[in-house]
Amino acid sequence: MLVSTVLVLFFKSIHELELKKSIETSQLTKFQHDQRLNLLQEQLDILMTYYPHPMVLFNQRGQQVLSNASFYELIHLQDRELMYDDKRLPRAILKIFKQAYYQETPMIQDISLNNQFYSAHCLPIYVQGRYQGFLCVLQDVTRLVQQDKLQKRFVADASHELKTPITAIKGISELLLRTPHMNAEDRLDFTQQVYDQSHRLEQIVKDMLTLSKLSEDKMMIVKQPNNAKALIEEILNTFSVAFTQHHLNVSLNVNEKTVLYVDKKAFESIMSNLISNVMIHANASELHINVLETLEFVKITVIDNGKGIEAEHLPHIFERFYRASSSRQRSSGGSGLGLNISRSFVLAHQGTLEVESEPHQGCKFTLSFPKLTLS
Image (cartoon, rainbow, N blue to C red; front, side, top):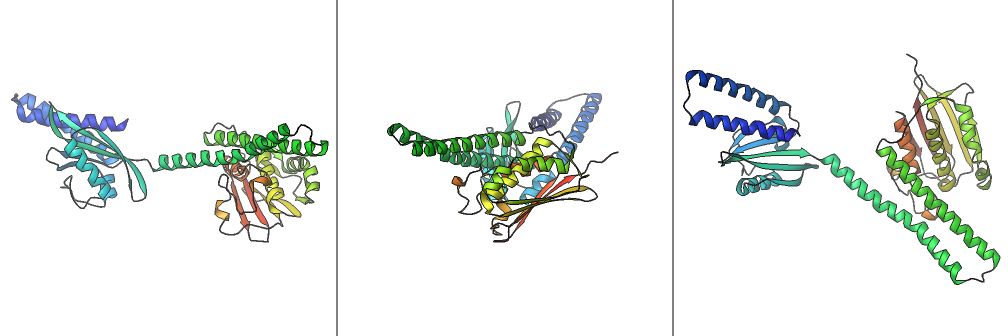
C-alpha cells in the first residue's frame, strides 16, 4: 500500500536528519551522507507532488513539517506553518489532529467533509524510541460508502419484495391444510395463486442473480450481428398469448436489412422487460416498436399509449425496486428489477436507454446500440 511507502520515507528522512545532527563523521562520509539525504528529499518531493490523497506531517511540537497540494485543497488554507490545533481547520479534521497529537498511538477514524467521506489514518512516528510527531493521510472513501449504502438498501428492498410472495404462499398453504374438504373450484383457484406467487418469487431471485453478475462484471456479453427484424419478431412471438389476454395491439416498423450488433440473450432480456413493463403497469391498448438507423447507432423506440408516468418519477424509474405510483402494487407482478436490468444490459453494450413520458400520454423508451464498425 502506498501509505506504508510514505511512512517508510518519512521515517527514513527523520532518522537521517537525526543522525546528521548527532554523529561526527569524516568529510567524505558527510558528503555521502548529504547525497543520500538529497536523494531522499527528491523522493519525498515526488511523493508529495503525485500522491493523490490529502497528507500532512506534524513534528513533536505540533508544527506542520510536510504536506501535499491535496491537503491544502481539502482544508481551503495555504498556510505553510500550520499548527495541529489551528482553529481555522475544519472541525472534523481539527478533532482528529488533536487526538493524534496527544494520544501518540495509531488511530483510524471516518469523517464527513464537504459532502465527501474520508478515512483518516494517523500514525505516530518514533525515531530511536523518541516521539517525533505524527503523519495523517485522509483517503477518500466516498465511493465505497455510497456502494455500501446502495448494497444495504438493496438487501432491505429485496427482503421486502421477497416477503410478499412468501407470505402469500404460506397463507394460502395454511388455508388449504386447514380446509381438506374445500370444493374443487376453490382449491384450483388457490393452487393457481400459489403457482403464480412461486413464479414471481422465482423471477425475483433470478433477476437478483442477474443484477449481481452484472454489478460484478461476471455476466459475459458476446456481441454478434443479428437481423433486427427476425430477432424482435422472435421476442414478440413469445408474448402472443399475453398480448391477446391484455388486448394489446402491437406493431413493428423495421427495415429487413437492419443489423443489430448485440448479445442475443441480453437483448431478449432488455426487450422482454420493456414489453412486460407495458403489460403490467401501463394499462395500454397499443404498443409500437420502431427501429431506425443513424450513422453510428441503431435506435429502437418502444412506445405505448398507456397512463404514462409523472415527471417527478421519471428520474427514478431505473432504480431497483422503484414503484412509480401507488397503482404499481407488488401484487401486479414483476420483480421491480426489470428496468434496472435492461439499463445495465444496454450500458454493457456501450449504449443508452432513455425514457420520455407525461401523465395519460403513454411512455416512450429509446434504446441506442452502437453499430458494428469494420476497421
